[in-house]
Length: 422
Image (cartoon, rainbow, N blue to C red; front, side):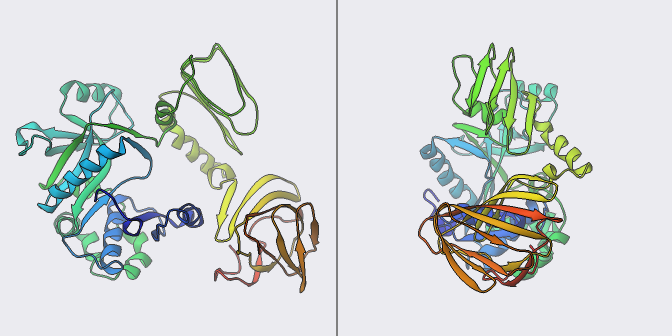
C-alpha cells in the first residue's frame, strides 16, 4: 500500500463528469473508473466500489481497501505513506481505520471524531473512535478544540473487504442485500439505494472503528477558504492570481481569469472570477456557496447547471459568447479523434481553424483545413469534424440560427455509440 500501482486505483464519480475524468486520467495510466448514475452519498458509493473490486478485479475478502476523497492536500507524502502502511496492518486485524487530523482552529466546515483515550492500543498511536459529529457551530468547535480528544474527520478509511461487508450486513442490511447482485446489476439500480453517508450507516454504530491521528499537514480544499490557506501569499497576506491590482488590501484571495480585477481597502475577502460568474464573499462564509448554487437552480439560471467548458469523448468545447440567434465556441479535438456525422435543423455553422489540422466532411465532400482556413456548413447539411494530426486541433465555431442549443443535433454515425442527441 506504500506505493500503489495505477492499475490498483479506482476513480469514482458521477456520470456527469465522464469525459472530464477520462481526459484527466489518460495521462496517469489509471484504467479503472466507476461512473455513478446519480448521487447516493458515500455508503452506497463505497459498497459499489467494493463490488467492483470483487467482480471486476477478482479481490478476495482479505484485500485491504483505502478510500479517499479527491479534494485535499497532504504533505509530506513520504510520511503519509508510512501512515498508510500502519493503517494496512491495523485493517488486517479486522478494524476499520479512520484518519483523524489534529485540529488547529475551531473549524465549522469539517466533521469531528471523538476519541476514547482510555482505549489506546499497543503503540499509543491510535485509539477507539467513540463518536462522530457533523459540522458544528463555532462555539461547539471551540469546545472540541479545548477538550483535546477531538480530531477532524478526513473522510479517509482503510479496511478489508471482509470487514466492511460484515459491517454492511450488520448495520446497513438494505445496502448489503444489493451486494448479492452482480456489479453491473447494482450499477443499473444504484439510484434506488439508500441515500446515506458511510458515517451514519456504519462508522457511528460499529465497534470496530479505530482512529489513527495524522501528525502532518492536511487541508481539505473543498472551499475557497481552504484554498487560500495553501497558496503562496504576498507581503500583505493576499493570494493574487491573474490580472490583479490591489491597494490597501490584506488577507484576501483574488483569483482572476480574463478581466482586470482591482481592489481598494478590502480585508479578509474572497474574489473569484470564472468565465460565467464572479463570487465576492467574506472569508469564513465560503461554505454558503452551495446556497448560491441552490438559488441559481431555483431561478432556472444556466450558471447553476452548466459549465462553460464541456468535455466530450473526442475533446471539449468552451462557449465563448452567446446571444439571440448566435453562439460562439472554441472546440478542441484530440489527436486521431472525430465528432459524429451530424446535422442541425435550425442553425448553420462557420468553422475557422486556429491550431492544428482538420479533416472536414460536408455533404459527402472531404476537405483538409489548416490554420487560418475556414469552411461554412449550411442548415440540414450532414457534416463531420476530425483531427488526423498528432497535436490538438482547435477551431472557432460560429453558430447562427433561430435555435442554437445542444439538442439540435441529429447523429447519423458516431464512433462512441452515443444516441441521436447528447
